[in-house]
Image 1 (cartoon, rainbow, N blue to C red):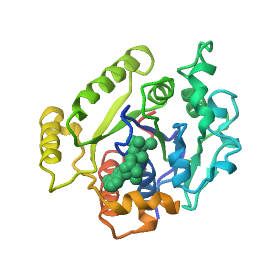
Image 2: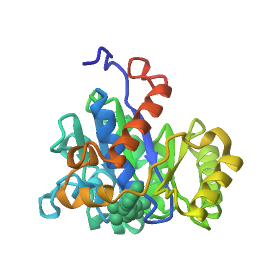
Image 3: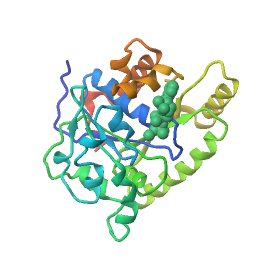
Image 4: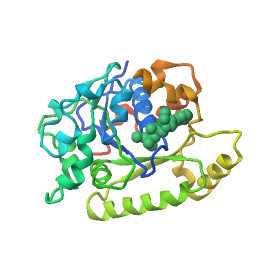
Amino acid sequence: MSDFTRERQPMILAIANQKGGVGKTTTAINLAAALVESGARVLLVDLDPQGNASTGLGVAPESRKKTSYDLLVEDVSLRDIIRTTSIPDLDIVPANSDLSSADIDLVANEKRSFLLHDALRHSGDGELDYDFLLIDCPPSLSLLTINALVAAHSVLIPLQAEFFALEGLSQLMMTIRKVRSAANPALRIEGVLMTMSDARNRLSQLVEADARQTLGDLVFRTVIPRNVRLSEAPSFAQAILQYDPQSRGSEAYRNLAIEFLMRHPLAARGVAN
Ligand code: ADP
Ligand code: MG
């Protein structure tokens, strides 16, 4: 299907916004699935103690023996934590509620902001056989999100078109600037993704227009519509592309993958090292 080589390290994309319910997990799961459909191999790292991405991809809570908590806090190797999903070429590092104490458990660890970076970028396991690593962040600017931003090459920011969306964004941008100056100067903003857009809702349209005016090309051309099929899919432990391949949600996440791959063609992957 594809002729790209896998000599290089995967590109690491954090999906972050400290607001909950803006579509981070939905985007992590469905962008991952759409990239796989395009021929990529993807590892999704669930970094939210709620473990919604793990559940949404069919890794039941009781089966999560080793999780991202073990990766960060217990120094368990990535290879021993990775799980397959029902989608070939999409693997996951699951999460569970253990992760909610990571901030406290790591408080005395001098390298606490670099743990995910070290685990993903210098895994000591040889080459990781993935094109992309997607990190699903928790709804906070806690140590977990900092770890994701320190580990990542770039960050994708889902933004729900509602009144205070842009205020929250400036806080995240400030955190990104701090991470750049303290730890990860090369961190890029991949783009801002408008989610749960409703063409019939005037406020939604106004906020979207405002975001494009303020942020310009930083906003993805692709917009994710509000689509009930997207919210149903996780309860069947499926990505939207499996659950309803013809839905508007599927179409939107396929378009997002195409837009993303235009900037990071599989064959040229590795420039982000
Ligand atoms: P976050 O990870 O940022 O907290 P989620 O991806 O879990 O956000 O989304 C919050 C809720 O909204 C979930 O119930 C999800 O199924 C639903 N949802 C997300 N995106 C859409 C969409 N485009 N259309 C309809 N429902 C959506
Ligand atoms: Mg989430």
